[in-house]
Amino acid sequence: MKPIGIRRISEWSPLLMLVAVSAFLSSQSAVARELARPTGTVLLTVTGNVDKTNQDGAALFDREMLAAFPLHRIVTTTPWTDGIKQFEGILLRDLLREVGAKGHSLHASALNDYRIEIPVSDAEQFGVLIAIRMDGQPLHRRDKGPLWIVYPRDSIPTLQDERYDSRWVWQLHKIEVR
Image (cartoon, rainbow, N blue to C red; front, side):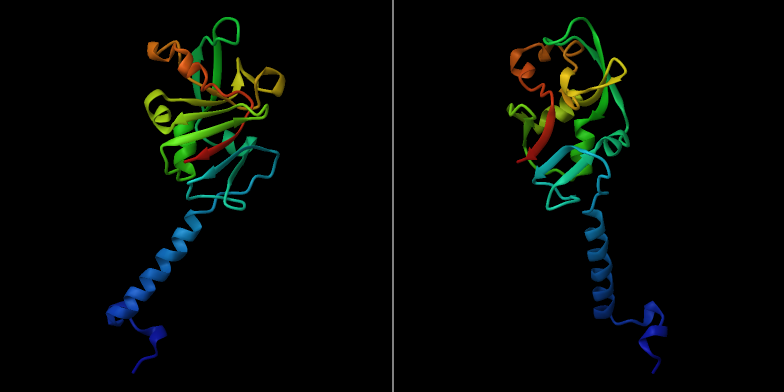
């Protein structure tokens, strides 16, 4: 009898194959649940019903991690700024996919303690942005940053409604998926 270490896989018993495949898949899913850790100041914390985390059951993101996502642009007016503004950032749906979010609502919190519930469906239906820049400049606290949830209100007439305006969370710092 050959030692198991040099047997061909085709010679393994079905039970041994099942154990080997299960061990491999378990190790892969554990790896898939880990995100890179932030090295800079954390700008956004995502908690709740998420599959991927990087610290104490939460997904933490710094500016560099957010900038690694594909960047998108929304050009629109807002009730809080003058004229047409150009916002750049990441799609909320991309962030939710990255963390493996499973839920129907997002509880968004701002640095000034403003909180609002946002349906997850908004992310898919409207292409909601988490803006990191406005008119080419990084957002700072004094100009509603460093992160601002932005809707494409000028290109979708339905969004020109105060119910959606209340979902524009500036100084965003936390999202809880429920």
